[in-house]
Image (cartoon, rainbow, N blue to C red; front, top):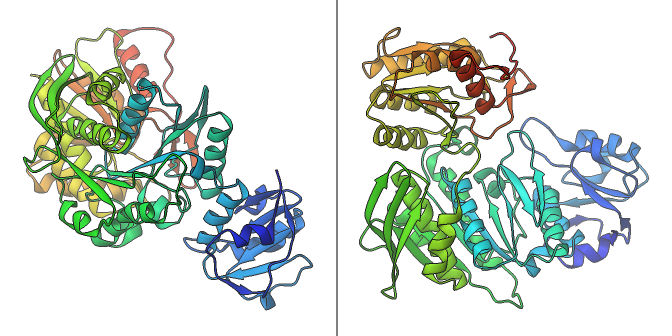
Length: 519
């Protein structure tokens, strides 16, 4: 596939600073990493974070780039290929990626799902509902991308993929004959323009709680980044299949009043609040999951059954059903049947069972709110003790270390603080911060909480401490397939580690504990 650069610019709302006329260069691909440039590619130099892409322009030229886009003046560089200066290379990357693939999102109905917690579960619920309703649907989530019968790994520690990858996935979906896509959308993806030009038709928010304040600076800035999803609804081009332009808001969440005032598109709310447009009543929990009654604005009522657990998953189900019924015209009965089809989401309250007489679960909970609701749910699931193994990432929001340790000290019987992607920070110092917070809430080190830097040993200890009827949780990594020490990603899967620890206790052969470097 090739496109002509000047024609691409005529189709997108980008302000070119120089030159006056964009050259008619044939483009064979787009890259933001100079190492990925191939002959004929357009290289776009991004700024921000710890890297300035303009430093790698010579390398991109050496790799055969046909043209370069940057924010700095052309006079600073010396090479023979065209250089286009724009105001914002992040926006340029998004819009030109869409133009390169001939705006695939305009040929799809696009549902964006954002929020602090519950994005992946809600996205998968929507995907399952749409598939059950007979819609040809794809999904791009933090776990993977599903395009027809193909499952694509979206990488290590991925939030929303970069714009060229997102547009490529959408293009593949169009080529595969799909008509709908569910796109899990993070605050980084929104703030960094990764989903700009995705032509959203429906936007769903699960909740907005404490997370990523290291990047956004404040809760208000984080909330504003999430709100950009709903601004995108107004920018969506007219589509032959129509534009629902529906915002789906959580009436129970602290973000509701702000988003309700911010959103200029159509909107529906969901929740337990009696004023919610779609609400849940008569929630019942059982060992096999839960059921409740969903009420809709037109008076329809439907019984919903799900193998998922926890009140937070009632909210996730309501979010998905509100989008499907209110935005896409799927019947409540069909939506409820779709919900029932979803059994397991990788790394989300995933049971690990090798025949032990206690419950072992791996979950992705890595924020204060997610930890709180997961521990509350665990308490409902067992009459025994709740043992929690988790850490807090290095080079990320430091405040949540304290908050998570305080939550766990209050709600778990046993807490084991351990490594979780320390990166270049001191793991001992991270654990010391968390230990001080746990102690401030009455935790006693050596009795109710421990510091165990080696995550392998932390999981082993929790498994060996478990008594019949207890519930052991390994939290924070979920589906992720690596752990970062220094600047190196080591292969790691909590589920594999938990199976290995269980096998050691039960003396079962064939389960090996993954390697991690010594703390």
